[in-house]
Amino acid sequence: MEYEIVEKNLKFIVKEKISKYAIDLKNRLFKFAVDTIKFLGTMPANKENNVFRYQLSKSATSMGANYEEAQGAFSKKEFASKIGICLKEAKESNYFYRVIEALKIGKQSEFARLVTESDELQKIFGAISKKVNLNK
Image (cartoon, rainbow, N blue to C red; front, side):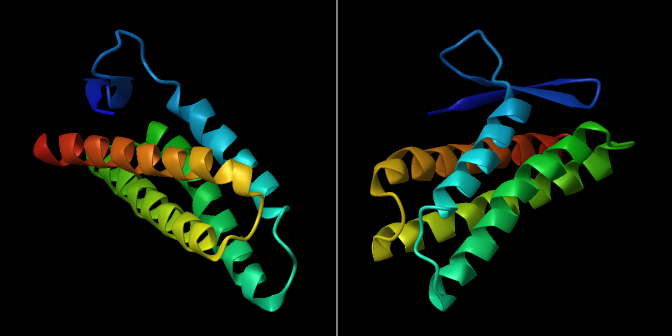
């Protein structure tokens, strides 16, 4: 999927290139965080899995928190910094989802959707970051 980023007063509107409607990224990130935490609850509790639970819960929830902070940024530089953090956290979430998927732990029926979502969020933040850094 390809995304288009439109800037309006330090606010960036994200939409799919083939659609005229904006994506509600704030709610999408919130849903991803909640869905991730619910998914992590399906993993068996042991020392190894607890590492994945901790890391993935941090990165998945951090994306939304940093995006909210980016929306209140006082400058373009601050906005770009917060979006850069979102991108890093999206990459980390995607990595841990792929590791968990390879190990086949947790509720398998959720993998395809959550891995796809983490990949798409990574692409969205990559596109925003690229646009912000090009317009410096």
